[in-house]
Length: 271
Image (tube, rainbow, N blue to C red; front, side, top):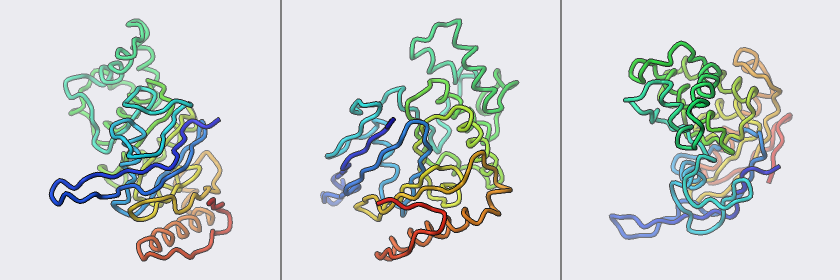
């Protein structure tokens, strides 16, 4: 079943300084199936985050359509939960309060909020920190809290905009492994924006590659890796290395204005 359908998405805006019309997104179309993890890659400035913001309902397209669960997106909704690059937590609320806030906004009964929140805090490894405030947590723990807050609302699509970019490399690897474990447990539908090729391949079922601006879908590559995944075994997997090399060359070709590589053995390219 298709959860997210993006069709002929096009976005223009007027530069406030020059008055010129800028085409941010040319013509982007792809879909995400229920319970599928999609990573979106592309050159810097190609509009990856703009696409995500339109799906989230934070921005509007100039033309084209975005459908979630068969309904057109016309603004923000709990059906589309967003995990931001910045932690975007309520600093005056406890860990538990941050997670229960969305449940209260959804109208979940008071007696049910804490048990639901507690389950998701345990899922992301934050049990025992319920009464702490965000400033008392490490960066990695704050991002886990952001994931728990979104998952507790059980969105149809989980949107993640480079969520691990602000943490150190060691913490990032741990969070990536944690996210694969959460995905394998709950099987949410995930739209994940990143500029890191290794991260895109490690996490995703398929990788959508956008071209330079005005962007379109350059290629969609199926990741030939079984789940569950961990970095120790994945780094030694030849299919992982071939897919990373292929995508790296594909992105370099986009920047050079000429893409002419072949799909690697083990990876499946789509038009």
